[in-house]
Image 1: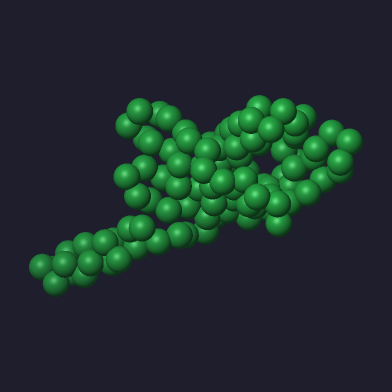
Image 2: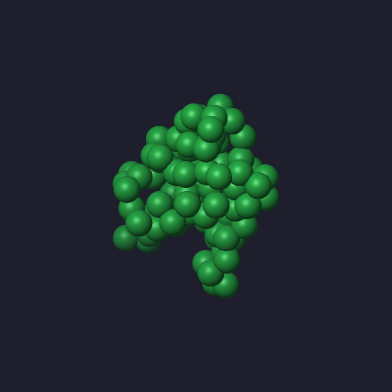
Length: 104
């Protein structure tokens, strides 16, 4: 029994910090994170952006959760482009911070 507990703790520790796929890209919280990234980037760059679709997503558990998402985003007058975004979320303080927003 001690061996199984030790193996479970070792496996959990090995996974902490690694990126893992997000299984449900339609999850409302994942959508909220994606909308936050699009809204914040649009505000900072003075662009009218609209989230079309979450194409791919991964998350990483650190002191909170880091989300790495590939998004299809429509820019008014420029069509739809794919962007990779990274958003950090602090679970204790319920804060999100925008880290990266680059065109694919």
